[in-house]
Image 1: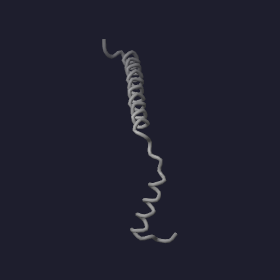
Image 2: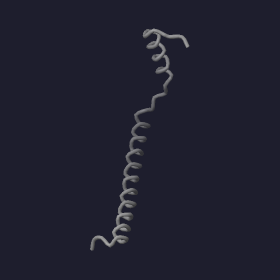
Image 3: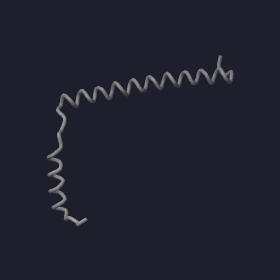
Image 4: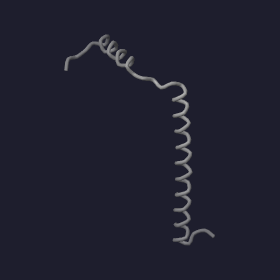
Length: 65
């Protein structure tokens, strides 16, 4: 592979960046909202699993009231 200079590299980077299809503001907002919802759902799921496992350990070892 041939080495390219910094000017050629930047020119190629610009050409490739021009090919990118950027999402619209609406698409970005919807996607961000979906990510937040999934993070909250995952957090609630792991909270429930953690509480169930902790309860099981307490019952198994007779800890707590």
